[in-house]
Image 1 (cartoon, rainbow, N blue to C red):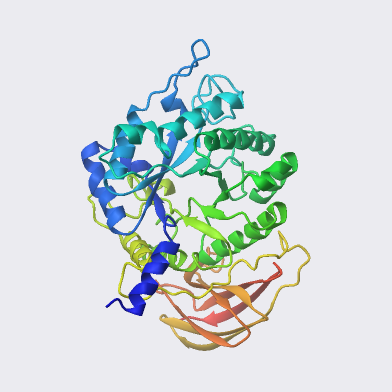
Image 2: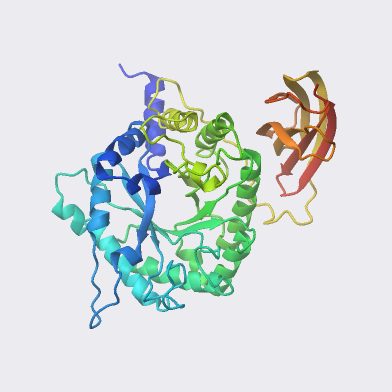
Length: 469
């Protein structure tokens, strides 16, 4: 007899089919013999998608001859075959330009917009006819698990000068590029989902992600009927900050698109140069468990990244990997996979199915002029050097972030985050315990910071001093 719990687990697994993946860029930097153990660990952990670039410059390094395009698929045939053998589906980033095709001729990194979108669209069409549904690759490999590409992400962080320059006209240029590529891919596979490339969050050399989509839609109003998803890379210091940026982006996307376009989180993560491994593990597990049933209309979670080099202590980019090169899992990778298995119904424990209130869809894009929620915080009890207990009430409800900071030595020394918590709080009193890490040598007084994002997009902040030692 099949129990009700197992039936519910199977239904949940079906509903989250294709939801979870991971970035795998550096997995394929090593020898092919090292690929399979890593890919097998992903698949056995419940992941289904592997995100890696389909670089136009690698596939078509030379310009067309006599109007005829010539593509070299050998590198990607090997990678797709290795992924399929482990039951993983490729989630390609269709980009970037080439040294012969960019608006800035000879660009060594190929991160400029193509001078002629028709050439890029031809490449996108060729990619879909090779690896998409009914593609020539699958026809020539009938013994492989048939896992064609079904989703195509056009470019990566196109609002960043690092990946597309110049930025002065990037939203408009990208909108035209996306529409041309989408038309070409859908000509090859009418069922394909074509996703706006994952947007970086606004900072130096980055066009604000909300302004970027606003300019895209203003330039091409027909995007409203021709976008299957918009990628987002909500890198932030804490999980609460991540949710707050996600909420603001959801609200802005609703305004320009009408509210039906899903968000695909195609990169998110933390380097262990900035957070502890245990904190990263907890945050990745929360993302995996909370996003599928949130009010944010997120239909993909692909953290960054499976492996990194870990050879330069001063370079944060080298420390995002959640797995080890010897094939063993780090606590963050293990926590993420355990959460994926739970949510997909692959464990005996029932998956949580409650709706997580994060985005409050329908609120203002920036929360401009919106009143923040009424927030009350009170220190209930302190066990010095160990934990601080805080009572919170948020009216009517909010997304709450609690951060406890301390200082070492001189009063002007940089504050250190000792503990944090992110959660939804409704119109009732709740008590949270913030456990303190590395409390030795700290000054006696710490600072508790509370930030609440309300359903209207307004933000309220409160601060309290607390004696921590």
